[in-house]
Image 1 (cartoon, rainbow, N blue to C red):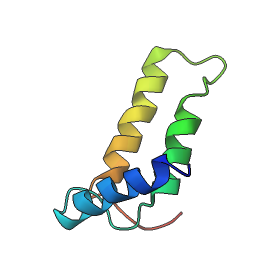
Image 2 (image 1 turned 30 degrees about the horizontal axis):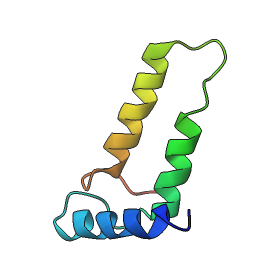
Image 3 (image 1 turned 30 degrees about the vertical axis):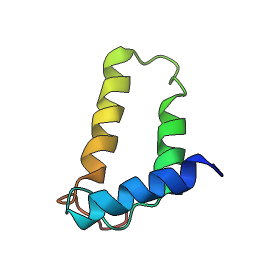
Image 4 (image 1 turned 60 degrees about the vertical axis):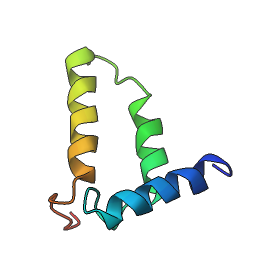
Length: 69
C-alpha cells in the first residue's frame, strides 16, 4: 500500500478530474475491493466472479448511485 497507494491515488485523481471516476473513491477503497475480488467464493463459478468484477467497474463510474445502503 505504501508504494501502490500514492500511484493509484494519482491515477484516480486524474480520472476524477475528467469525470470518468466517482470522486468518493479512494486508493485504499479500490485496493481493498480488488483484494476481496481475488478471494474465490465457495460454490460459485467463473460467471459469478465476472459479475463481481463488472459490479466493481460499474461502481467506479461517475454516473453510479453514491447513496450508501
